[in-house]
Image 1 (cartoon, rainbow, N blue to C red):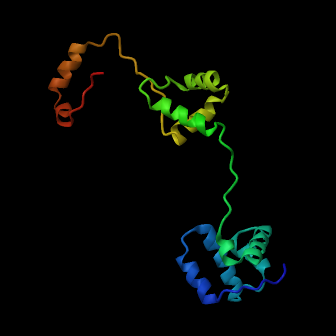
Image 2: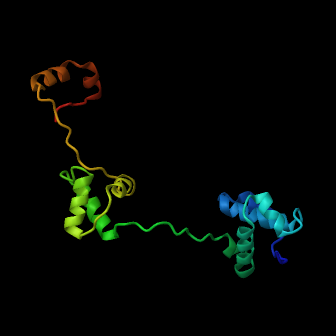
Image 3: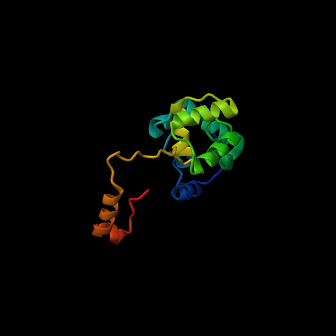
Length: 172
């Protein structure tokens, strides 16, 4: 690895290292600090100390040479996988899920997306999108027992001290 000239002073790097709270930037500052203070003889020792590959350290130093410390500490966002639903469809789906009728289950959401937008999406993908990204759930009306007696429910609500205290109601 070629020599690198570090412009910043050792004390300045140490101060920045102590103030940095973000892990990846702290790791990069640590690499510069170790090189500047002479705690490592060359950059080839850094992979062993920092637990990074040689090519990662090489890329870090290349960025430092080109952009300086300020550009070096700005991390590029990761690529990640693109969302399978376009933003307008997500907004419409979220609005529909907010309404009282909503969708009864994930299969109904799949059918709605296919008929309305022509988008076929696996239900497993919807299980990830709907609760996590949209913070919603399908509206499922829980069935009542055929043997349920409304008069018994009303009596229970009147007599239960816990329900009176917390003012819950079991009536639909």
